[in-house]
Image (cartoon, rainbow, N blue to C red; front, side, top):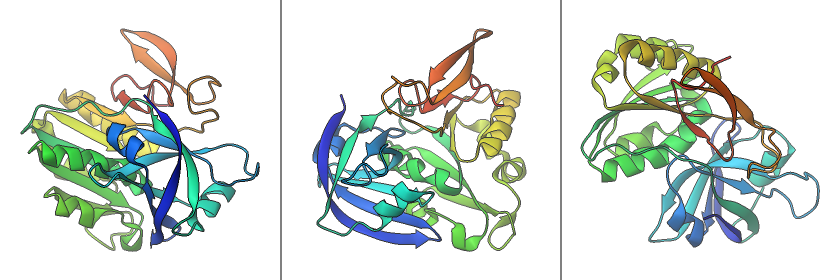
Length: 262
């Protein structure tokens, strides 16, 4: 069950170029949230911008009632969020959407993150750590200064292997290329991923070829955030039949082998 509430801003600060971490006091949402879900946040008290912005839930502390977001400034709305000050309030609707399905405790798991796609995967790895899962994290970015969340993943005892496009840190290349070099994911119970669509399309093909199950968190432009406007529909194939599903209500997480990667 989702909530609509005013949340108090506890902290906002940059963590990478044009990328900000925001911490909010939102106990009801923190209590209900599961990894892979998102919140729909109002960026301004005025009608400009009119629409809310969907942001993945980055991390939660249920005992403290704290919710964290990690977002990239991509327009007027997120630019306004980046300027928020501690003590101010923002209106949230959430948690929304279908999150990741969780494996059996102690499972061996692979996680693939590209760019800002690392944001929802921290919450996922947080939960996997509580379940004593063995996690290998394939983390990609354009360059070393754009790398996100590597320290957080390591603090949760995930094995982190890094790829950067320019080779300034770790393997020079993409996350799918990195996974081909480190094929331990072939012996995992599940591979979770979030990042650029091209990256996830390649990984989904690798998983299908190796007969490894996977789940992908998709990002699409949203209007209402609750499934009414249909602006975020994507093609999903199930038993050979292609249908349209709403990322906001039926996702954002889908089995990777069902997504029609266009």
